Image (cartoon, rainbow over all chains, first blue to last red; front, side, top):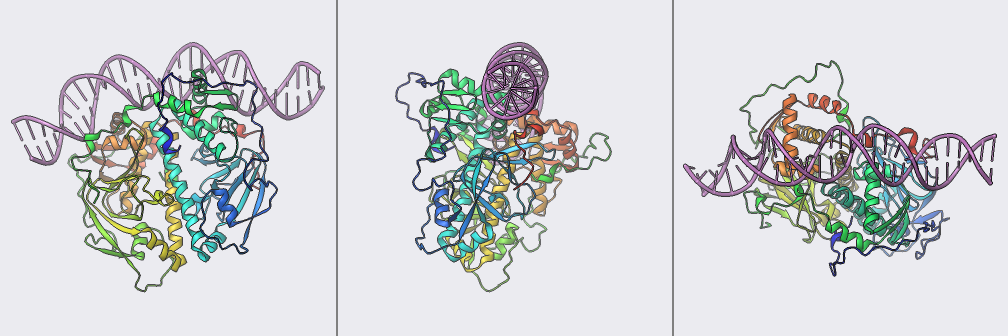
Length: 290
Length: 290
DNA sequence: CGAGGCCTTGAACGAAATCAAAGTCAGTGG
DNA sequence: CCACTGACTTTGATTTCGTTCAAGGCCTCG
């Protein structure tokens, strides 16, 4: 999903070096990751600095006086964090665990919008109306930090650095959603799934887990909903990637060599309809940037 | 794109009442719309209250003292407002005119992200990095308000009501982007195009123009990029809608009966892959909302 | 009037959805 | 312990939809 995603170096072209696959690998849920000081699963309160660190948003303020702290809460697998239409008052920052957010259309059909995990935030799409715009469900046991929006705003008013953090979080969310739109529009099924796996790989790496071996927390159905594909197509795409040798798949267990998957994506043709028609920009000069 | 979109009443089922079509209708560019006091095209400066009004974000502050004002700037058709990678410093609020924002992938292919028009804002995806994440191009002559982000932040710090406005704008953008994702994932080509036209219709209505007769400002290619379709498919979808009788199309001129288009969309089957599998939620009870 | 974008339409092809069936796995209860 | 259940996954066959390729029409501008 990163825009630098396709900048794999093209040294050597001996097709795709196959990944070696241990057929018995499993994803050991790392209850105690190898992060710096963020591994305290049983923590009950976090202050704003800790939250910024979890969000990976740099915070300039160093005024380390005692600040209000925010409560952690455990959610069990399958539980709903908030429902659509419910009155909005608090944001949730994911400290650990895996979730999905979904939209329900007018027929009650489910559209997956994101798979939040550590460092992601829930509820920002609901600020401008006073109601949650989407629904969040825990895909695993989760530890979430409750951040009452009003308290956050107040904090922002006290110190500009915190306010900046809020802007940054919102802007980043928007940026990510745009990347998703781009992915949905411009890519074939295999590429969508491949990029999704790379995205997960990077995410796991960021969180301090293995970037090459992990376990999917969501069903094929959910992945398909997220990527705009049927569950069968997701399954087939994974099988294809496996045959080519760039990933290993066994049910929910994934083994991936990002480098190879990059090359693989590059070898797929871009749909013609997406190609820029350089001359056709418009009858007008588009160069100068007043 | 509105979520109430599909709540058309189903009274009577005499298929779709055809729209009467004037074959000579054209979209008279309404330089002076029938809005309240927002029709001053030649205005050079706006204060924050005026900007909120244009954005259609309610602003609670009534402290009507002299506030800093923001400059308007004219952009000609085809000109680029900002380029990807350029240093970010200012947001743009569209006072009049039509634009597109695009992402360029690693091959220089263009992906349309939005078609901003009056009341929309440009640049919010660029706050968290210090660089513009997308490119904006004028599809018609435009009147934009330059809002230096720092100045806006400062204003927000002076008064909480303004800060709220910023949060609301950002949140709203995110919300809209989600609606787009949902559209892209869950609908067939005809439905995508139909909803796109309805979206435009509502937008024109909001701006005080005719909701039933308007002119497209973008090419089929650009619509296709936005909706994840080829330009031919867009063209065919419009022809289909025309044959069914729910819209009139002649090149860029559109005549539309929203009510009929709603019914038309409802009659299209939802792709099965999107259907909620109510029992399959997960082995766990999803009901309670801790 | 001619050129160049842009739009429309047809035909062939290809990718993904749909339909269908069998395999895997975890949990349950005999 | 093992068979049974139900959710999830995989794979194949078929159909549908959208893309691609190609040709012709339209409109604007010089």
